[in-house]
Length: 224
Image 1 (tube, rainbow, N blue to C red):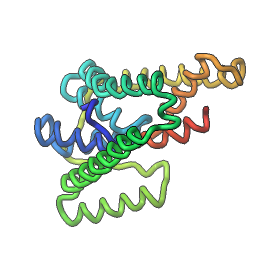
Image 2: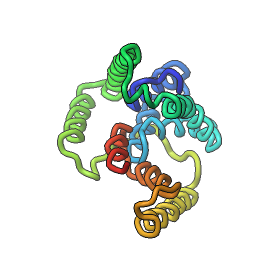
Image 3: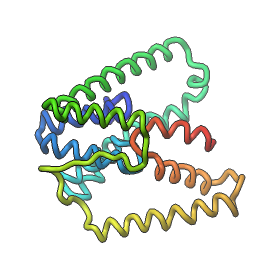
């Protein structure tokens, strides 16, 4: 799926549902929606979190690492090649390349629409859930608050992956790296182009971006 998933996290979520819930029946729609809800509350693009979570649910932590890497590496290869060898074309693209980009963008819109329809029919199967979902979506779009996160209940996830102690250690490790890097990049190595500044920028953006990958673009633009 890493080679065919165009359109960003919204389209990826729909592909995951189509393959892993509807076709392969690895887990129920309720469990998948809970994974999706949890991923929305974590830093980084939603589909990235879900790709790791799917493997973790089926095969534990190692399975999660493998599934996440397998989903991410095609895009990494393509964008690395584009950045290294096609920089001039991307600055002033010829007509045929603009046509390809427009076609891929149209495909992404169709995939996002399909994903939205699939999630709607699964999550809002009756009128009560449809009303609650509509009001929740309106609140999330027009009244943005930090505490406004999806809540779930009933049949779903209990515990996968590491223990609570292990999770606490991972959070402590994340902060132990983030805080010193932020301090060094803004004091000792301020206004210097070196690997630490690049690491700090990517690590900081990855730590504060929640929900969708489109928010990475303005943050990256302000940084560089």
